[in-house]
Image (cartoon, rainbow, N blue to C red; front, side):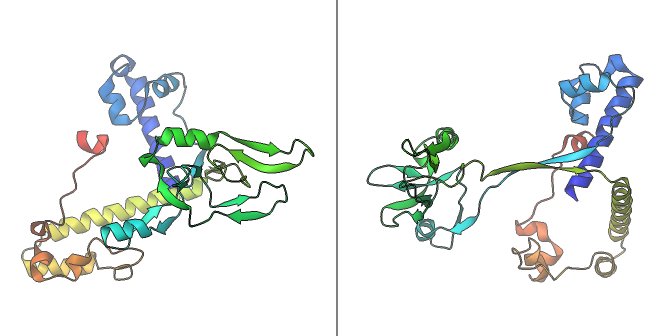
Length: 279
């Protein structure tokens, strides 16, 4: 959904900028306000000026950075008094030996004897720690980047990956290769894009018309009836995967149901996109 919709929006934004440039190039050239509204940079502006027609988006390129799993953090849970989880990304957490001050980015490692056998760190000596409390994140990532294949000087046998971020043994793979996977390119399908735009426009039109009907209701009873008909509650995701933000309204008392803003739990959304603010 996001890949399709963002491609459509960006293509329309670029087309609008290109049309404005062709219509009044002197007025648009170097105008920060226009560029801010359209969300284009100076290099993109120069690119558009060299085109004979509005650009089209051929494909979407996805570049992934895996942020890691969230594990239960015993120390943090004990400190704060409730069940806590911490992000176990090797970019921000490692394993520290409190006696030697050595660091490892991986709990599992290849033994240095060249047998290819794996082992684990001793839980009595090593503990998971946030690296920013001991060094800068930049320094730690530089250590992760300082990794290269290790080869036995006697036999020429590959031993694994030797890393400045792994004091114990070798790694089976480069630590950054585990986080940055090869980009994926997804080419557009015109039928899918056409269907998406038509469905989204139809849905948003129905929502706007329904909101107008609710706001025009003559009394509270009519308003509630229209809400039930036009915006029925969804009870399939009240607690999973997380507690729904509206749960306190749906299952609260009459006060919060009728006046949710007065509870202090909710605020009116403030527009934060340039197009919303200006328009």
